[in-house]
Image 1: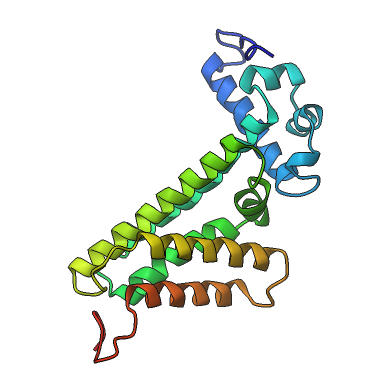
Image 2 (image 1 turned 90 degrees about the vertical axis):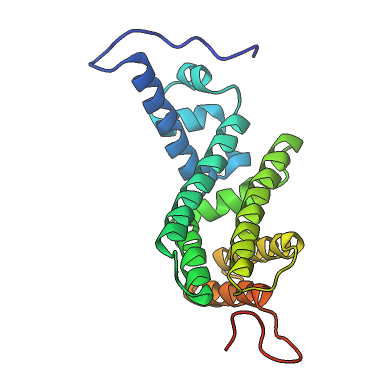
Length: 223
């Protein structure tokens, strides 16, 4: 298909064309969360099935998106945006807290967001992987943004004398890999632990990165 169909303009049922378009888009994304994030999954979903789940027509689908991959891309960004919003709120609320409390509050905000709905985990860690070069680029770009956030927090902690002063980019990338792997395995039932235990373990890992044991005495931020 060369491009999306042109959506109607003008006011209808008290709503502008832009409001109706936003509502249709939301309905398609809500339906995609149900179908992509559960059975049958992204690869098992058709345009017709998604449109039916959204209570809309395939014509309306093509007014909003070119392909199902476009829907997956938008949904992946939405799920990440929910988590980022929660994390940034936690960053602001944790201002002035000691490092351990601050790290715990920030990471738990992320974990609470992504585990609030098991379908979010599947979108973030399962359905997005291996779809296409374009989706891999988006996935890695979002990971890079999380790495940047961790590095910014680590640099600020180092400036306060609470963390070791060093380049944290490699360690942050490794930590993000641990988060992705452990939360995915927990969501599939492979890890026999509560979400609180999983989060506590990941917080310990992050604190260990920020405050590695010093062989000759207490490290930064330690008594």
